[in-house]
Image (tube, rainbow, N blue to C red):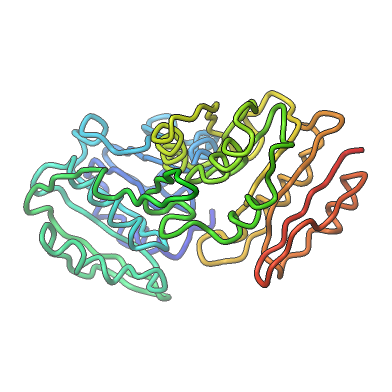
Amino acid sequence: MLFSKNSQLILRNSVMFETKKVFFTGNIKDNLPAYLLTYKTKINFQKYTDYINFQKQKNVKNIYIYNNFLVSKKIIQDCNTVVYYWPKSKDEAKFQVMNIISCCTINTLIFIVGNNSCGVKSASLILKDWIDFKIIDKARHSILIMGFLKKTVKFKIEDFFKIHTWKGFYIKSLPGVFGYKKIDEGSQLLASTFSKNIKGKVLDIGSGTGFLSVCLLYFSPNIDLTLTDNSIVALKCSKETLDINQLKAKIIISDVYSNILEKFDLIVSNPPFHKDLKVNFNVAKKIILHAKNFLNKQGELRFVTNNNNSCEILLRQNFKKYSLIEKNNKYKVYQAFLK
């Protein structure tokens, strides 16, 4: 089994966890929690794919696995140790850690592990009012720190929401969700191609903050809209955005098409082209390759990508016709038809 650099640091200090009741969460990238010897192991995943894939492991029978939006006292109450994998976003890390420690009792042992390039060294400063950290181990540009929770913290989710506006509508977002700091330019370019001519059943893949769905409903309020995302936090934002604008749509947690059982007249998406800090085309590739199984005969796929990514070979192989319908200095929008 090949473990990430972060997990290798934990594994090098595995003796510290043998008698502990450990709660794992954060940006977990491998199956270390299934192999690390502990008294008890619990894990919370926020990505649906990670949750499903971990359940398929052979040695997880005595491990408690969750896919919850927020950590609760009920989940974490019998754990005396937390292992948090630091993500690439400091805002996301603060949001998640503040939620976690608000559910912990005083003197809970907190471990944080992460890559230096993701700003993990800032954890000590961000959390100094509640935890005094010390370095346990470091290697290959990763670091493992440890500290005890010295006082309780009050966590209010409302403190972490950002609200953006678009044509009088409100877009709500939380740290870690694409479009948190501002409405993404690529999404705006894609939305600029929407019109009142959109009808029927529409699927928004990777709904994120819900911005594209709001745009669709703004132009075509009578469509039958379904939103889907792999992130439970993103779906929370999508729902909040719909609710605050008094809009209606179906919301489904899904890894691209994994939980989609219907066919649609239009599929729209602003797919991610990065996984953490690395370029990754896998999601966009899945969307294009399998769209024909989820589109009606006259159905259309419409998506945005940055100008450095070429999708034309895949589109040519999987669609009868396609075209570039909008472009600026950073992004371009494709539409493709089965017939």
